[in-house]
Image (cartoon, rainbow, N blue to C red; front, side, top):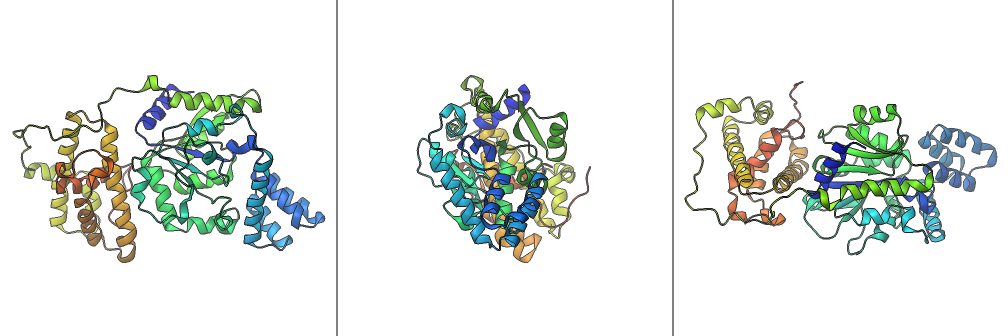
Amino acid sequence: MKVAHIQKLQKAYREKRLIPFIGAGLSAPFKIPTWGEMIEIIASKYVDPPLIPSIKHYISKQDYWNAIDSIKEFGEINEMTLQKEICDIIKERLSLNKQIKNDSHNYSDLASLNVLNYLTTNYDFLLYEFLPTKTTIPQVLHKVDISSQLFFEDRKEPKIWHLHGHIDDYGSIVFSREKYEELYSNSKYVDFFKIFQGNGVLLFIGFSFNDYYIQDLLKRNNRSFNSEHFIILDNPTPEAKRKFINEFGINVIEYNSENNTKHAECIRKIINKIKDENDKEETKDIFLSLQDEPEDEEWPELLSNDRRKEMENNLFCKKIRIEKIDEITLDYSKDCFFWAEELIRKLRKKGFSYSVIYKILNISYMKYMEVKNSVYKHGRNSQVFIDKVHEVLAGMNIDEINLVSRNEMCTYQKQGTIHIIADEKKYNVWWGENRINEK
């Protein structure tokens, strides 16, 4: 277990950016069937015995979608029947395996984390059952109709987002090839997931190296924001570690279990290290106010012509240049960028931690994504897009994260935050379809 990996996870945890991403392995102690086991159970109910070996052959190769297609064809069942069967099987298993000791699973450990969001591909409600308070109901991600900025709002209760549906809504269950492709053709779902991937640090727990869902998920979203994420694996091979880091950009946190009963114990140690209070860095209170600044504090000089010319080499300028956006907007964007930089320096000078700055930029980015979804995708007009983003950011309410009075942040500083983000290669902020071919 690399110290650097744990330190990065501790930092993400302190900044409320850590997002546990829970897979089927965590529900194994409760006897929830694996994908292969689920397919076999359903096949035994609907498919004639002579045809079952062909389905088992697909399962042995982890070709689950062809196995499911075969069940639907040979068993003459539709999608709704398949979804109901999955829900019934899981509910039955849960009713038979309720009395599981806490030390034999990790749901209690995860429920103790002070995080804003959990993601899961599981259909069960096990995590919800172990939360200390249950005032927030688990949500199906592709069915929610909310502002994306609520994903990272500072709140006392975490939210659980089910990526593939849950057992209380059988119509939400994503299990077959058709449902999976339908899910990933949903632009709102894809945008929501990218927001989690781009603004948080994902920690995959309960996934195996051979998990088809997770590999396909990572391939579809690999390096969309070039963010750094992590996966916990039991005794991975060097080949598996290389694949996760090289193909998916995922760092591996490894452990070695002696037997199946040790999995929970090993994962628990990793979780405890991440939330270890002794490793917290000393930062000033993020609720510091800027209202105590001296009235005669020096303001920076206006943006000079020389500095404007230098900015032409900045990435955010190049992104504006490659679209049909006028020179006046470009010049204004340079001014906004300049003043947003000054704001960040000012916040750091006042003692604000980087987590405060990340929260401001997160809100700015999510406002950008909302405009992209509501305005740009309909007209594909880059000038209208950037103008609307500037307009929306001008009204951005920083009170949403209880940082500073909204009067402390002037309009062009708010508007400049999106150009600060656009100036970083790792963030996917563009003003149209064109891209810069840079190594």
